[in-house]
Length: 348
Image 1: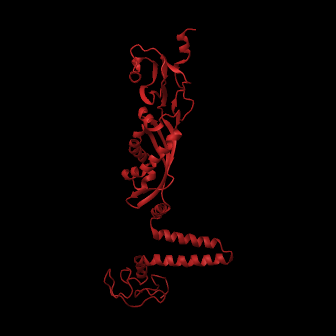
Image 2: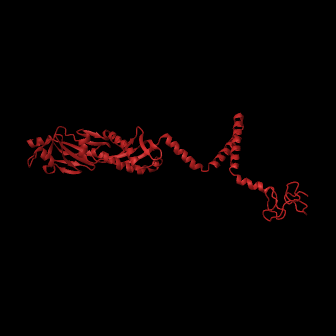
Image 3: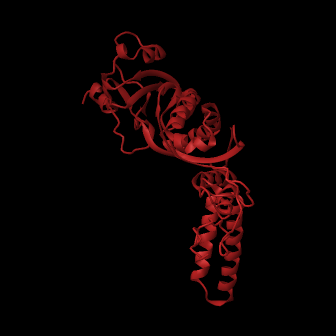
């Protein structure tokens, strides 16, 4: 075996990484103590970026494709190593593969209430939860600011930072959207889109970006929910007088159906009293309907037969003077030649 063959056996000539999991963001290629052979094949798959690091310094970045490592396609590494033209020996360097795919179905939620200002209820505390998706937008920035020189980096390490960023910015996003608390449930999609635009710039300094943001639920305080329920109930009830009468009638019906024992009797009496009050109030609220009935019972004109009010001395329709004999039974005026009362039929 020649010297060249011995050196080649101690060098790496194929560099690639196949992602075995779903949450790996960064993988440092295991060189196993070997050096990289000049002219080695580097394979970068779709949704990957490869970065060479020389003694802690970022060097060349390789996007998806197949490369034969030469000084021509490693300009930064060539400058850092001070290689002369035609360098053809193995070299030491670290290769990091960064996963640029979307990491989906990441859960977020508020552990404590978030304050928001509402035009109708003032300051309101809300709880919310949902899911989000993110991806690496700038591999170099992500390497510098986040994972450093870790051999393996998963979504678990960065999820906490993203969740805190989301929760801290959610109240600002809701306030800027100006969606009232009563309308939040009907505007989850609009609010999610607005929050996505508001929160994405906060992750840019980490080399990350939000690709999707979904609000699954927003819980309002119990006081606000009660106020909303009361308003809904009032809208369903409509006419409060008719609703009260209906409730009283329903209570009396239930009491009539339950006549066993003293409790049933007491319920029935209470319902009857309440019904009496409601009906009295209903009649008092409509005095205009009782007046015509009283006027109709006063009698009729002996000349034209039109209704007369109580105590009328002249007919308001024909002007005929009223008086003379009246019916002994109903009090209606009788004509001089009448043998029977025209109103009740009583014999004269």
